Image (cartoon, rainbow, N blue to C red; front, side):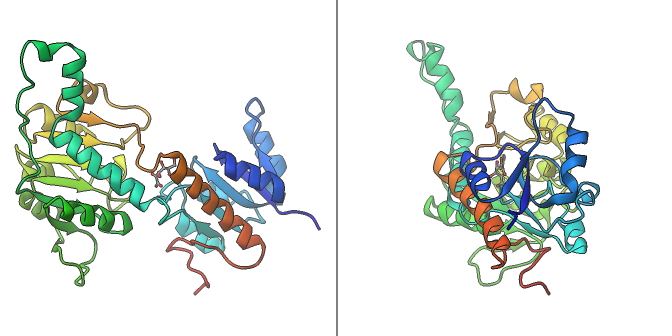
Length: 320
Ligand code: 8YV
């Protein structure tokens, strides 16, 4: 029997590529080939997409008449039009859970690094300044502070549990209140910003969250406030954030995600009160391998007729 044809998009983890090569007909866009001509030649037979990046919008999906499943690497799937896929009857899967703790660890690490100025202190030592004078006392602290988490999904909850252990007073903002949780709920971004000393965003990218953290929200956070982002860069008005950091509207920021990755605005690079990371929330070898295994398993189980392991909300399984 002919093995199902899978098209690789973007860079796949070795564990995924090797698994797909062994069990499927894997189509990989040759780097020096005419991409369009290649896609046209494989489109009629492709039944699955394995995404390691790239945009899979409706028009792209429409090119594959036999498409059954799009398996994404990553819990966020804003790169895929899942509503369109649902309309086509195409399954979309992502890689939740296996990265939750890794991203939550990074979020807490970035928060502490920003508030206690760890990277700036490191630069101070390396520049030989310590022999002249001690590093200035940090303006921020976690002691007796309030943390507002934007987006209390799986990762947000893991961040909240850790933050509680650090003695932070946790509240959250989200689309809906989760009354079983012991944290205070805010339905307005401005209100949670006014209430919080540190605002930590886990918001996914969507039309509803686009530039949601804007000048008004930052002003509400206030001049002693810190903003941390480990969700998606497009959920922040980056120009407003830069201005707020420059003119002292807020104190500091720790950013793992940006609006136009991997391009980071030069203005942010020039600031000492900002900690910049290259989108490494889930980026340990162990966790990325676990994500890869789950991406592969979704394709494997789908084509064995067992259904997907981790379907996204737009394409529930069993289908409704
Ligand atoms: C990855 C992520 O960086 O899972 C996500 O949504 O943002 C990260 O874990 C990305 O998906 C793959 O590069």
